Amino acid sequence: MGMAKKNMGSVIAVLGLAAMAMSADGTSRNYNRLYEGPVESEEKRKRRLAKSEVRLNKARGMKQFFYGENSLWAINQKNADRKAKNKKWIE
Image (cartoon, rainbow, N blue to C red; front, side, top):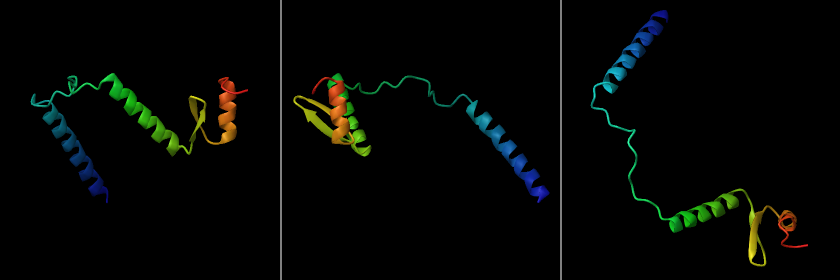
């Protein structure tokens, strides 16, 4: 059993040296350059963020409550009313 540990250690050392040599051969890809892909428009970005907010709130078990033209997310009606009072939407 002691012999297997010694061999395993030397194998790991050799693999580590091989990995270092392969990364220093000059043919590695340049991962540090900036990604120049398509730029998302501001309108699409806002739409994507709104959809993700809805999905996240539903995953948290929240429901959307409406107060006139305003809306908010809460876990129940009591919390929704409290939040609406804090925002001065209701009295």
